[in-house]
Length: 474
Ligand code: SAM
Ligand code: SF4
Image 1 (spheres, rainbow, N blue to C red):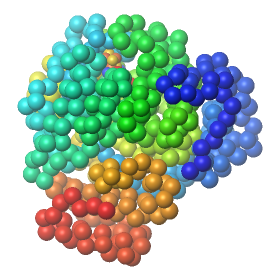
Image 2: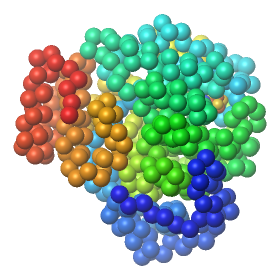
Image 3: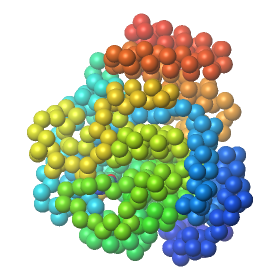
Image 4: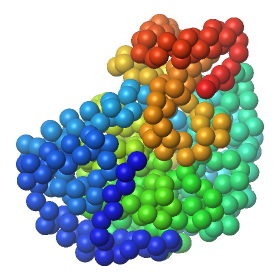
C-alpha cells in the first residue's frame, strides 16, 4: 500500500497535536479545481493510491461544478474495485447515558435536566444482548457517556459480559467501543478485554469551533481528544475509528481534518484508522443549535464520495442517523459498514414499551428505524452481500484491514467466502419469508464468482451449516 507524504507545517509526532487551522484554510481557499487536475486526482485514487491533503482539497473545491458527478462516479467505481458488494452490519448498544460533559448538540449533556439518566444493570445488558442476538446481530458497538461510573474497568467488564451472552445459535463475536478518550493505562485495560475497534470522534477538528460546543467537563480539552487514539495505539490498540460530527463547522474543513488525522496515524503508527464515521447532527432533546454549518444532503453525498476517494482502504461507516433514501444513495459511494435495527433508547431492544419515557433516554433521533430484517431484505434486493464476518480478528489475522487489500486474492479467499457463510448462517437461523429465497440467490451468484476450489469448500461449509454446525469460517 502506498502512503503519500507531503510537507506539512506541523510534523507528525506521537501524541502531539497535528492540526494546523491556517494550513487547512489555505488549502480550501487556494487550491484550484482545474478540470484536468480533478480528473488526474480521481484517476490516482482509482489506481488505489491514497490522496494527499492538497489533492483532497482539489476534489473539495470541485464540488458545485459539473465535475461533482465525476467525483461520485469515481467513488462508485472505486468501491466496486476495492470492496465489491459486501456490506458489514452492526448495531449500537447504549450502556449508560450519565455524562459530566455539556456538548451543546447532545441529548445526554449534563445540563439537560429532562434526560432520564440510566446505566443498564448487568442483567439488563444480558437482556439487551439476547434481544439483539434474537434478530441475528453478531457485531455490536457499545456506547457510553463520559462519567466516573464508566471507568476502564467497568467498560472492560461490560465487554466481557456481552461476549458471554449466548442465546440459541446467537452470540456476539465482535464488540467495538464508542466512549470517551482514556489515558494509556485505561486504553490498555479496555484493550485487554478483547475489543474490536475503539472509536473516538473529534466532533470538529477546528479548535475554535470546538470551544463553542464544549464549554464544560473533561471534553473541553481539544488536544486530549485529538491525541486520544495515539494513546490507544501506545496502549496496543491498533484498531481505531475516527469521525467528525458534521454540522458543527464547515464540512470542507472537517473532511481535511479527517484526512489529516489519517495521515498522522499512518505517519506515527504505520497504520491508519480502521474506520471513518461522518455522523450529521440530528435532533436531540432541547437542542438549540445554530444552523449555519448544517450540511445539506447534497454536500453530505459529495463529502462521502470525496472521503472514499481520499482514503481508498479505510472502512466508511454510515449510521441510521440518515434516512433510508440517503443511505441507499450514499452506500454506493463507498460505505463498507452500516447499522441495522438500531434503537438508541436505553434498554429498548428488549423492552419497547413506554415510548414516551424512552424519548428522554435517547441521545438524538434516528431517521432509519427499520429492523435488521428489513435492512437485510433491501440490501439483498439491491444485490449487496450482507456480511457479519468477524473472522480475521478472531483468527489472529491482525492488521486485517491492511491485509484485506494488500495481500493478493485476500478478498476472494477470505472476505467473500466469510460474508457468504455469515449470510448463510443468518438465513438458516433468522431470515423469514421472501428474504430466505432472495438470500440464497445472492449467495449462489457470489459463489459463482469465486475460484472453483474456494467455492467448493464454501459450499461444503454451507451444507454442514444446514445440518446444524455454526460459526464456520475461513
Ligand atoms: N460520550 C462519548 C463521546 O462523546 O465521545 C461517546 C458517546 S457519544 C454518545 C457518540 C457520538 O455521538 C459523539 O461522538 C457525537 O459525534 C455523536 N452525537 C452526539 N450528539 C449527536 C446528535 N445530536 N446527532 C448526531 N450525532 C450525535
Ligand atoms: Fe456526553 Fe458524549 Fe453526549 Fe458529549 S457527546 S454530552 S460526552 S455523551
